[in-house]
Amino acid sequence: MNGLPNNAVRALYVDSRGLLWVGTENGISVKENGRFLNFFTDDGLAFGSCWAIAEDSKGQMWFGSYGGGVSKFDGERFTSFPLDSGLIDARIRHFFPYKEKIFVGTENGLSIIDIKTDKIKPLENSLLNSPQSYISGFFLHEGMLYYTTYGMGIYRLDPELSEPQIEKVSEHQLIYAIGLNGAQIYLSNKGHIDEFEIKDLIAGKKPLRSFGQSIVWDYLNAGTNQFYLAAWGIYANNGGVFNLQDGILKSISKTFDVDATDILSLAYNTEKQILYLGSLEQGVYEVNLDQNILYYEFENKEVLGFSFEKNQKAILHEGGLSITSFEGKPIKSLSKSELKKVVDEYVKLNKSKLPKYEDDFYELDYQTIAEDVLFYELKFNQNSYWVSSNIGVFQIDLTGRILIYVPVHTFKIGFTPEGKFIETNPYGGVRIYEDLSQMTYTYFPYQNQPNTPTNVTQVLEYGGKTYFSSVFEGLFHYDKKGFYSYKNSGKLEISKIKQMHITKEGKLVLATEFDSIYVAEDRNGLKILETIDRNKILGKTVLFLESYQDHLLIGTEQGLNIYHK
View 1 (tube, rainbow, N blue to C red):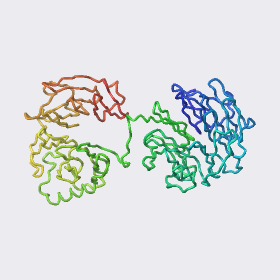
View 2 (cartoon, rainbow, N blue to C red):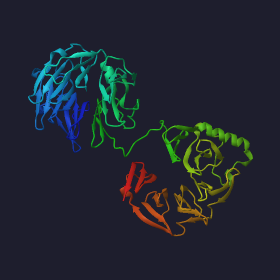
View 3 (cartoon, rainbow, N blue to C red):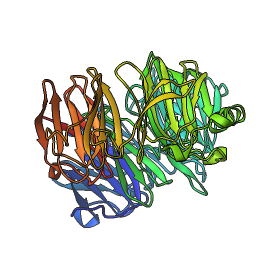
View 4 (tube, rainbow, N blue to C red):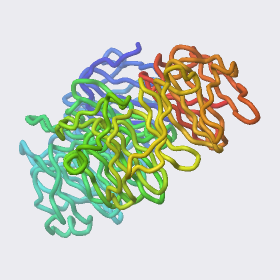
């Protein structure tokens, strides 16, 4: 079979061979080579449901059912151990493998399995006979084994003894699950988590703090800063998957594209860096934690552009511009309202000098309210950030101070090799500004001027030239000699260029609207070095091009394509 026997997943376990075992409410599954193999009571399971999974020191797999006892798989067949085989209770909650033993935590009491003989010993002194007595977790500390119960406190015993004595060490109540992270231990409570130093918990002290939300049912330590929590609120829709890092609990369900709020179990394949999440209603989620690709949510805002210069980060987003240190320390945030205020003050003082639509400036509405401001792109030049929008262009210094406001509406901006500001009008040519403060410029109309770019999609500078890509007219450049059209000169017939990128080595990457992607070099004349067939790329529309070392990153509406040689 290819799927799970049931979507209600109660337990997950990755064994020493890297196989994923899934315990559901109706059978168990093992995933191998991308396929699930399912087992039921007809195959030898003690019972249909599976709430606990463990592997012993011999590599045998153990499965605990809720109501039917324990099952063992030795690699060839299943053996079942029902209540009358020595279990203190047939409702299994947790296993704890220890050397040649397995401690079995049940709804009411503790049993020990000898894996050499398969004999099961019930510990009668562990019986508590209360609706709140189920065992919710185990942990080992300084040679002693501790186990928690839901509502009857915490206990310890010597795991080496055949007839261990059980001692109560804490009255702490309402423990749904426990998680260890170094010297810290976390106890799930109803709607929050209690954090202790292990030694303080054993000594009966109060928690260091209580925090969080929902009810956490499983914890997993996958390495540095990867401490994951599985939550389900039972009666509240506030569960999911969380990460606890530097003492801060953060929901990462959206990051992992997990829409379930009833996550009960976690497992991790260390070799493949895959995290598995078990949901009560939606089966198993598989999350690749490979650090090659990370997702960073930014304040629930759409990110439009970013700049990493001068050991700073500048992020242009739908709400404005945020500047921080490279480590993330805030420097300055500029909101739509702050930028709009600059525009209003400029208009008030310069009413007679405002550019006019009749002079081939792209239309700009100075009455646009702050909430309707749209941002187009962010560029870095002359130690400044440059932001273009539907209310004009802003030059902003590294501290976030607005240096110059340019009252022009332009989608694509750029700079000459000498650093002069370039404004493009999709229908009205190009302007190169000699003095922005005085709005003095040289205008290059596109009418009857075949070398002037129009319908510009990108403006980039490299090697003493400023390149322009056009969605209709192909590739242009500007240098000391003026504008030059590669199409009109017969050097490049490509016309519909949607995206352009220049690598650090100076290679031009051109993505056409429907045709191939071209890698070119412009040294002593333009030369196509490589053609990338669009059939190799997932997606119809190229949204961006970027490069890293000798890898080309191609973003489309379908996702990210990484092209290498």
